[in-house]
Image (cartoon, rainbow, N blue to C red; front, side):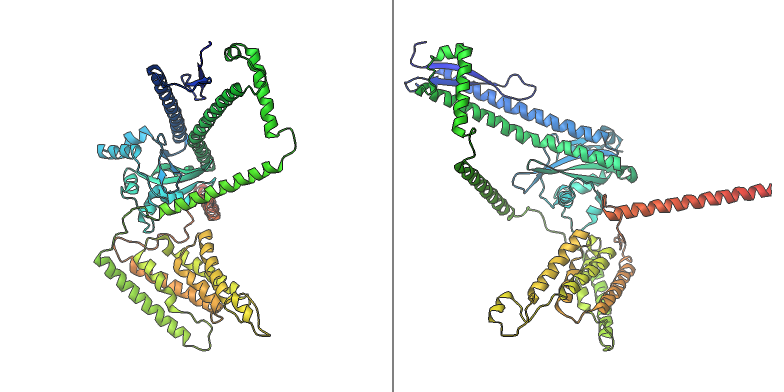
Length: 567
């Protein structure tokens, strides 16, 4: 007890679940002489402590992985029609989507129902292996981008439509095609966001699944709740590690403070170290004294001090600066691209077919525009060149959603209205704001023309995206109508007539080909889970079904009446 240094082994219990073995040794060295060189026993003791720490971390990781696996399995078992469930989480840099360990489940009954061994092996491979992908790339990346604005809702998509969409960047491993090949046709996406951890949960269903039951309110509520539980199960891993590190740091600080207090005899109690450890009452008094001193140092008993507020402000500024640096660093990492292959070229035959169709359609539109614009007594003038980009989408990217009839009509109407609305703002005699300084007396002031044009394009693009009617070539109409009084309501009628001609011509010409079809949809009301269009379609379908049932009942009653009369 009287030696120059005293070595006391203290055990700290880490709060890791299902493990009472997470006790890590801590060595407290107290004395006036510096510590001597470690002996062989001390080296073994240090290695033992390190191994215990790694074991504790591994056990926490295994527990969190099993927690995620159980949440995913429960979601798949209880969700109607779900035969395959995946979790994809965005990494800290925001550059990759990764499927965490335990973040997948496949229904064994679905796997056994596949017709041959090749498909069974394919399904097993899809369940076991999943490579990282960038946001906006592949099935998971595309669905992550599409569902990012639909928090708390279910986003439904058909895998076949994603495969046929030329604007969807496919991954190198062809995961979409492989999923479709084993019989999966529908996928529901539910996003989650917990404690800076963002990701999505994908629920896959068979091609033959009943859509009404899949999209029922009860099933969708369960999908959302299960996704929230999965997101929390995934996010808790990082929080648990941070909490464990905080406890370890607090213990190290407490040990250092005890060593310092005994060295300086700061508390005034002045007991011997061995008596303090053995006497619980003395240890309790010492803890109370330490708590009182800490409260006095932190100023918890008095009003908030100015220096404390300044310190908090400084911490907030530092935190915001770190966030900005992280965003800049993430942006820099994205400059290198996702290292994917470019889109494939089309065959000579397809290009020839496209050339003939575009030539005939553009020639006809220009001929119509010349005839309409040549009549000075009408106000239906329009520019046939507005349709050059639309023809590119219609004939070269036929399956693209941006080229369907709904997108063409509604995008043109929206951009025309935006341009005509902004045109009503007075422009004055200036093109830019800085010209106001040199304005002569009596000059008219207003919003410069360049600002009106920029606002028209900005409102045109963002409005199309918000409404869901994106057709990129239509944005030029917002700029044209905001720039000149030449285009009027009569021009809008001419544009609608030209749209009708272009769509009818595309239907008659494109469908002559064997491999492509146009249009893929007209109103496109069927694949939005929670928007107003989906509700309108459900209401219309319900009304149609009721009308059919009423007609059937009237027909049956009339037949029965006729049979009674004949008897």
